[in-house]
Length: 79
Length: 379
Image (cartoon, rainbow over all chains, first blue to last red; front, side, top):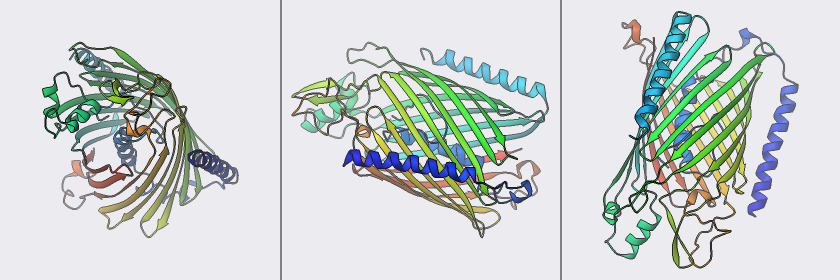
């Protein structure tokens, strides 16, 4: 049962990556003047990255896994 | 204070040198400063107060620099059981804190951590240094990354490397100070693709190789009728793959969905699913709702109870994070830009105030409340 979950997770991860790769291959180019919504703070807020890093700090002290935001850190007093 | 002061001075000097070099190359165009207070409290009575101060600047010469100071105060409550009782003995055995004298166990334990981080970026290249100090732990890290945009800035590829080296100096029960180390080599590759005028896909992989001590030097475990110190393997390779899709929904709202798969050679594997809805309530106020689900399967040497068995290949752990469980996290985040109130103060026109409230609970009956408030200013 446990290994089935592991296999499922791994398969799902590769399926998502493969689908994403296929999507990227067929992407149309979006012109700069069409990116108004993408530049909105609702979509790209630099503060959101900071908050994610704060969250990762305490989550790493309470869960067995790590990462997922594209960076790494050192020691933590909260562990 | 053994290495702390020297390390902090070194980092401050490096940070000042970076900022001086930055300001010397070109005029400063933008400054941002943010103060955040994060408060964490859990069902075991553990409380963590974290202060963050972030400062960043951008020059007219495309050079940016960032500096972060973090101060943690961790309070682990005193054992709430009669001295000598089975509950007290169990609590002392499994405590993840130094207990040199039995009396220590009946007093709150307070731990302080400080860290400093500096980074400099120029045309997609980034370099950074990080130092973190506690009275029994010193961590340092150097990092470098590079990112480049392709296809009319519709596709961005980023690669990063970091190396951290930690000195662990635990207080032994006989009053002496131990010595151990932990080193981590980290690499990541992240791709971001604009899919449509309203959607973006971000995906990446991460690799970590950790060597050295990876168990809590203060925790013990009952194994086959006797008490033994916790012991984990001193080698671990950790990998994860993550994907996030962000979609602007129209009507001043956006939705972000993410998925992460993690596994390591201790045979832990986990999946994480997240969903976040951002809604602009007015020109000044934005509200976010989020939910996150996490589950994992245990490390190969984890057992719920070692008391009737032996250790597994010499390893034993009392760390529930290496077991099997699921966890939920949900909460809300309010951001307020007080443009109207500060309209007369040009200097503060880009002020942002925020507060968030989150609840975390897992299948081990662990619950926690996390509150974070912050104020950010751009000038």
